[in-house]
Amino acid sequence: MRIVAGALKGRRLEGPDWDGLRPTSDSLRETLFNVLGPTVAGARVMDVFAGTGAVGLEALSRGAASAAFVEQDARAIRLLERNIAHCGAENACAIIRGDFMKTRAQRMDSPIRYDLVFLDPPYDIPAIETALAAAASLTVPGGRIVFEHSRRRSLPERVPGAVRYRVLQAGDSALSFYTASEGA
View 1 (cartoon, one colour):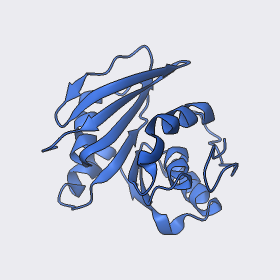
View 2 (tube, one colour; view 1 turned 90 degrees about the horizontal axis):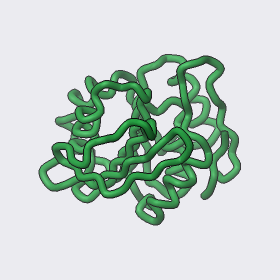
View 3 (tube, rainbow, N blue to C red; view 1 turned 30 degrees about the horizontal axis):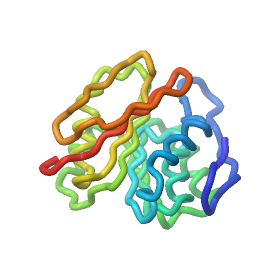
View 4 (tube, one colour; view 1 turned 45 degrees about the vertical axis):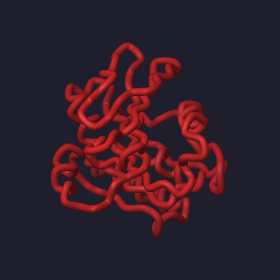
């Protein structure tokens, strides 16, 4: 696993040495950022279910201003900390430890909103609509929300605060792209 493009291009990231963590592949990240294009430059990014941090670190490599990583697994947090340090990105990163749904509720009073929120939960997560609505509540109007999921699972076209505008499929994975709306 490596950073695909940008200032950190070619930088190798450490992967998990345990089962249960499915990092976003290099090719799927490349597709993701090709679709997002120049909207990443200067963006505040949140990488939810961050795992290795590959998506948030790729965003930083491509010019994002900052990246917040949400992760609850202690092993993944240690791995994430090592990958951030290896990229020399400590000053641009924040790790939010805990369950996204609970953490999101605690952060609702925060004035911070993100330009891009990427979610890569386990493919069998039951609360897709709840997770999407939670991401919308943390996204600036007009910002992007991207949800990685199994291509065999369809996601809703609309959730409170967001509307889907594109779905891309690659192998067993799919990316659903949403735009956050006013009042999210």
